[in-house]
Image (cartoon, rainbow, N blue to C red; front, side, top):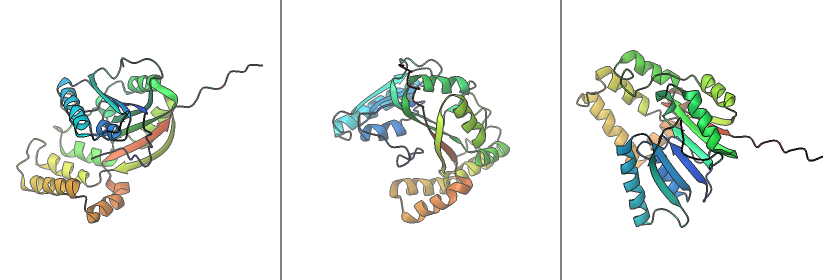
Length: 244
């Protein structure tokens, strides 16, 4: 289940990509399949080890084209172990809402992104997320949980302040918003409630089968109740030095 739309965020074979806060690796795997040179970084060592295993399995199965590379590593988003201008593309999906110093993370991403490079940022959307917070304190008052809810204009403002130029936005995963509302209403750790179990089965069916009905329904509903807000931006090229 991808949050970044690669039709709006083109990726070329050979692009050097950083998936920052990669989690289980869903975007890193897609970039690898598209022929990129991928670095998947997360502070969670257990998840990174799983991502590394999947990278190895994908290579063994021939899922990635020739020239594609993939590395999984532990790291700190506020102190990235890469030189300036190391990456053509940076993706950070559903991460910034967890980090107190979001401006610091943006600064590090801008530092390691090449001039002319592209960045994709996704966060929970304000409206659906606000409902989750209202329904359940346990949803967000946990260690490592969500510490803020972004309004679109706020996030875009921080992106601009970091020196990036936004070029597009959209919403994603409308069908997932009701699932999380149900989880919050019945208890975020209560997976046995019938409405939660039934809706989860629907989501699994949708992800596996991708039926036209739910695909069209989600496209229509995304502008209204999409769970995620997605922003795309570029890092401007430096002005050419005056040689006269």
